[in-house]
Figure (cartoon, rainbow, N blue to C red):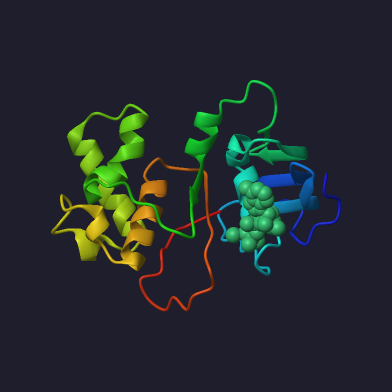
Length: 198
Ligand SMILES: Nc1ncnc2c1ncn2[C@@H]1O[C@H](COP(=O)(O)OP(=O)(O)O)[C@@H](O)[C@H]1O
Ligand SMILES: [Mg+2]
């Protein structure tokens, strides 16, 4: 475990990593990453291009599992559960650990259906409840006012910045315990998503 912490002793941690090493085939991309990430706070990973930020974030919901010959060594605990333990349900894990990519990837569906997609997959069928989730998620991603009058228009018609915020709403809609996104630094002065947590 990480022994020396900059955080107060009683602070709740949502993610703890212990000596994580990651390999793309023979190439090592992460070296002994031991980190504590507090709950209910925003934590930023900042570093030069290619230093491993996205690789690390993909380890947190086991998205790297899909890359042939990749290998992770070390332990990652999310809410005290070892996510690499045998028997871990990765679909359930990815519901809890949301991810938004640098390049936004809306589905070629309506704005409403993009946000409702995750809750529907997880069994939500009630239209009133879906409508509430869609509105709440779009509000949290600070895009509600811009799209509330065209929820049934195709998401591909949104601007790049709006597509990015729609993808944040889509990630928030399944009620993740943590949500990470990768981004180039950009001076976001307004329309900044609020209530986002890693
Ligand atoms: N799918 C992959 N296969 C092989 N190497 C990869 C792959 N993805 C990333 N890498 C390499 O891993 C290193 C870390 O990349 P990445 O995590 O994308 O960095 P960052 O997000 O900090 O820019 C880089 O050297 C990159 O070229
Ligand atoms: Mg990256």
